[in-house]
Length: 235
Image 1 (cartoon, rainbow, N blue to C red):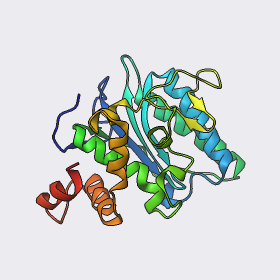
Image 2: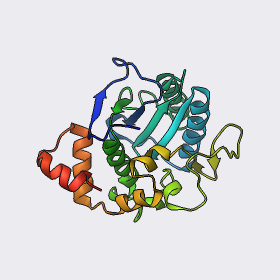
Image 3: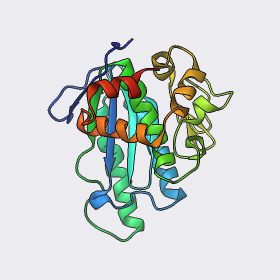
């Protein structure tokens, strides 16, 4: 169980040690904010490789959402796992294919991926909601659950277990186009009930979403910590 404080430790993994069984926010965007996914085939290739490498490098997927020009993950490195190796292999494999089919050269991503250690339940809940709501407040879909390239369906729909061992293709934890994740840490942070997480997410307004983004990106709110705790954190 994480601490009941509101905090994240922000740095790059090349200068910190990634600790087994801890949660991390991993994210990156396209170079010059360009698109990194052009069509369904790109998303499906990224999904298949990510599922394969997560298994190979002993990384548990908790949350993911892939937008047109950036991606977000919440990941946990299991005993003996290697998040850094998995992410490096994924980026190389995906960028090589993307450049080949689009007849382009150069860097696809805006430098190395970014990583933040998730140090509390409150921050985990805030971050998960922010990630899942990216497509909605990015004006790509009306409801967060309508975005195909996110695991929010595991919370919204019945029949998706917190952690599924059912696979459609080898070691990939797939059900259709959904990469099944271990969402139990999010459920626990929300009080142990899946519907409470849904209620928390559904309470987000665009203003609250913008506040969450400001905190996640900068580590503080210009509007003041009391407002942040009153309007952003309390469930």
